[in-house]
Length: 392
Image (cartoon, rainbow, N blue to C red):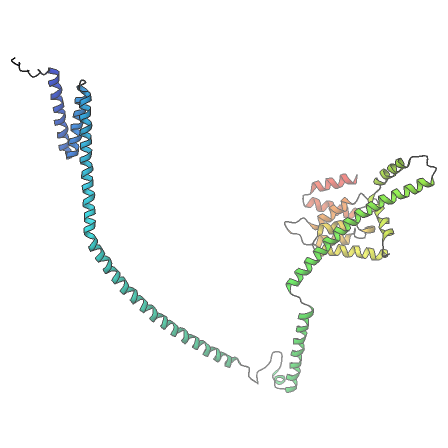
């Protein structure tokens, strides 16, 4: 059976126009790249790849096949690019390997030069050190010779005049002997003064520390003593109440009597009760004058140790008001005042006003006036108001 030859398909007009458009696109892009001077192999691959994308978009029936061809085309181009990069890297490595012997030779030559320079510097350093040592030795010898010359020049001559003596006295053996005895006496006096009148600074600090601890112990003992005296007062009051109740006709219950007496006892003035209590319970029977003297010494200790607040309270509550006077006020006025501390005189006035509620120790009018004026001069108006309100 005779086979009929297959005729090639007749191209459509649209296909022809598309093919012409693609060819024109490739031609135009090449011309643009040539004009810009960038028409290399990589740019041509990009142009052909874009043209192939246009063909894939146009031929929808063969899109899968054309896409696979495009992928293989891109992979092939990538392989070529990577091969070129590898070639460049290998060429660089090859050049580096070829230049290593030359570089090593230069390094060895430089190391030899540096070694020679180090040796020269070391020799120069040793020479300079030896010269410097010689200069130092010569300078030391010259300074020693100069000192010896100065000592010889400044040495006292037998005929020189002593300070405070005339020429005739300085040449008299008796006067010189007398002057020597005076100097010996002054020397002995200074040595004795050093032992008796002066002590090291650390000794003063130790004494101050001991004094501070002793004062603290004394304050603690006084607080404990007050507590014990208050306890004794309550017990003595209860004992007296029981004794009185036992001697009475016992019309009132003992428990009610104790409660009433205890309540009345708490309202009594502590200051008026403790004074007689101390006098009665004094174990060593010290006289009143000695007690007052101890109180004043205690005040002086606090004042000297700059515990002005405690000293002010001590003066304000002094027995029979012996320290509530103008002399004490002047003493606080003369005390030094530091910027960060409160005025000692103001502390004294506060203690006075705080203890003025006791009828037997009223504040002197002149001292009260001075205190108000001093507080107002230091802008302490609230203290003045408090004092005036308290005096009502």
